[in-house]
Image 1 (cartoon, rainbow, N blue to C red):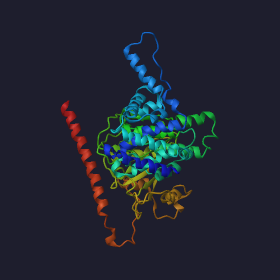
Image 2: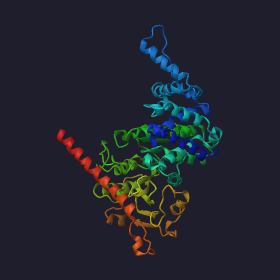
Image 3: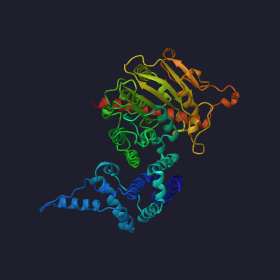
Image 4: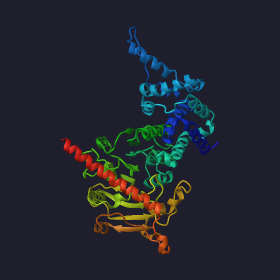
Length: 496
């Protein structure tokens, strides 16, 4: 059985939970709890649940200590076989206890994954059905293809379902793979994603290093340990997405720190000195206009994406080699005021060498148009960008979606142009270049590089009404977010 077949079987189990009113996202979270338990049994790693769990000892324990010891004994005695062997209400209550107690008494990643965990299943027979179905899967094939790949497949399935809302945490894997391949993370480099979602960028970056070092075999012991334990880190604001990221990292044998918090708060001040940043910061959400409380950014703006951009180029070290690839919406390219000043600051401090104009329809918010900014932090803070190359992968591209997914081959032309020894020799109409002076004359706007198809008849150039409507909705939501942030600031000033 292939990973894809196993993923389909797991995904079809969500039908069991419809009567409990469980959403797609809740279902994936529930599967995270159960799959982690089963996968630990399959890989002989159940001992991780009891690591660091110590009973209170002595002849005169308090009632509270006795009660805590009873909870810890349940954790110490846990096994998948025990869970699977119970039935009915006994199994259901045992499962609920495990979720609560793992988050309370376990240590390390196990505690992080189960912190605040609670089941959304109300019917014991539904839990029994899922446990038995998971237990019956072809786990030999799953191990052969990689448990991490299985989990990634499940996350991808969830992102495909528009009703789940999970697309905001999931960047298309062909895009991630392309960006990682072009930024080329190296052994010993510190890599980070400040808005890591389910940790996909960092997992792909780690895999890239593995592929080029024979699974770390060609590295010395110290560097190999660094790759597994410290090289790849992230931060995620949403608790459920953070839990999925932890699970994903653990299944890929990655122990790097994944913070739960807001990069745009003062927590982000400590996230710096990185060699590589790969990220797709949140955009198009109702909270997008909230003002960050972080007080060290040069330019104060309510635009969340502009604040992330500031954080990212400031978080790179000044070695002259530190680099980033960042997915950002179109408004970052042309926003005036602070937007113009931030772009100018970016082009001063970094060599913004490439902007990729991405196709529409590849993210959950269909009307939001996106781009990838590639830049390298300079050793100095001035004059680092001489020219910016643009590649238009948007115009005259097919409509992407569930029935026509984005694939690796769609990036072939861009990758060839990106890596060409002399880009001026590349014969590709989608590739264009603008000097720093030309960009400055346009108010430092980076809304450039889109081609025009002259062969299309005039009436066919009318915009698609659905796409236009979705884009209008996205812009209205952004305007509403900005208005809310202004009102909130006025309220706070009045309260003073």
